[in-house]
Length: 222
Image (cartoon, rainbow, N blue to C red; front, side, top):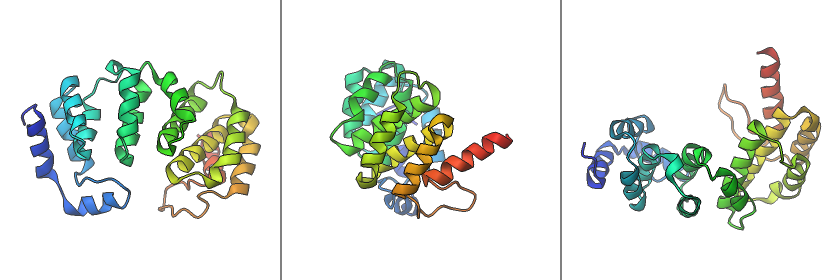
């Protein structure tokens, strides 16, 4: 495979599967490439920051996923990542950009604060996702009661992507901070967000009270 935009796009086009696209499109992801095969493409390319930028600029979803995987996260400026996040409207691209690049970038806290209260709910969902990461890993300096206040006041009526991210933060507080567990459980029970979400066998429900109790139980027996 050529390490060029045209070479990568041709490789991805050859991997396109209409059945995979149909499944992905139900989740808002407009591509039809098996993710294991897509990762193999990125592995062959290795880290290529310039090519990553060129692939991102195509706007093609599969190409952007490869771009994320061949990026060097520390090389992006805060302004570049802010522009990329605001342009990443496809859920998988958004999630990978936050998880694989932003979280490993030195400007992550600056971006977390910038995005957290953004009027665009998709952008704000990234701020909440980064906040959940801090709640779990480095909570010092965070106002956990204040976060619970915001969840209690806003989550019920939040748009889907933002609601999901706020719910994850609620569960993360309940799981990692026993002092706030009862309040987190109570908020989840009152709001009933994702209570009826269809959960496959063997998976944990995203409904916060079930999620919190299940993970705490596993930690206790582990």
